[in-house]
Length: 161
Image (tube, rainbow, N blue to C red; front, side, top):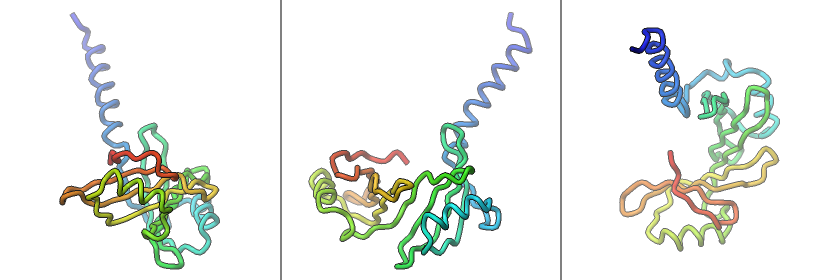
């Protein structure tokens, strides 16, 4: 016979495990005034010409809290700077136009997905501002398709979000 304490513990563990998974990746909008100054300072230092307009927090699958600070570049492209509570830059995402994407990357995408209609491109940069991957959003035969493409175009995978 299972003790009531043991059964309660198992239920609590399941709720904690599955509840935490459901919350991972969820973005919660916050006011810019709620972003810690060390986080805003890091975002401003990383992209001094950006005009930041909104923010949210996201809890990653490993439990890490990330502040996502969104705005526009000086030439009006979308930008997002992802900053850890410590002030460390996790990632910088900048909207790209086709002409900013290396030819080899475009060729790789077009070769693998010839009917892919590109609607949006974003370049993901490391803290050192080196492009680490491109994210393409678009459609194939009317169906939505998001692709993650390595900076050299050699790796293409369907995004899981």
